[in-house]
Image 1 (cartoon, rainbow, N blue to C red):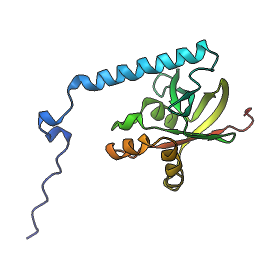
Image 2 (image 1 turned 90 degrees about the vertical axis):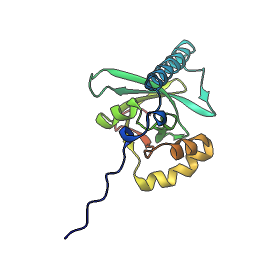
Image 3 (image 1 turned 180 degrees about the vertical axis):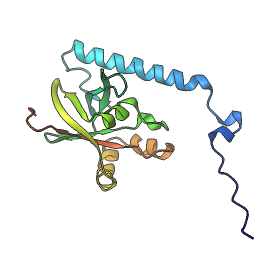
Length: 172
C-alpha cells in the first residue's frame, strides 16, 4: 500500500481575507505609477531632457516599448543604475511588487526598444540578464541604489535585470 499523497500547498486563495490586500490597493498603486510616470515624461519633454536628468542619483531613462497586445508604442520613465556607451541596465523592480511591470513584459515580447537618456535617443535591443550576469551586476546595482535589495527581499519573484544594447547599424 502506498503512502497517502501530501496535502496541497496553500495558495493565496487559501489565505484568510485579513491577510490579503484590499482589492482597491492594486488599482490605486497602478494609478499612482501612471500619474508619476506621466509627470516625469512631461517634465522631460518640456525641458528638452534636462530635468529631471537624474532620479534617486541615477539618470532618468525614457524607455519606449511596443505593446505586446496593441502593437502601439508605450513609454515608461525609469532609472538606470549602470550605463555606458555599450549598454543601459534597467531593473524591472516595480518597487518590489509581486508582478512584473508592463514595460518588462512588453520588451520580452518585442525586444527592440528606444532608450532616451540626457535628451539623446538610441535604438537598442533589450534582453534579460542571465543568472550569471545578474549575479555579477546585482552588487553594482545595489551599490548605486540600496533599495533594490529591499525590493528583491520582499518580492516573491526574481526581479529581472534588463540589459539594453545598441542594435547593429544604429547610431549610439
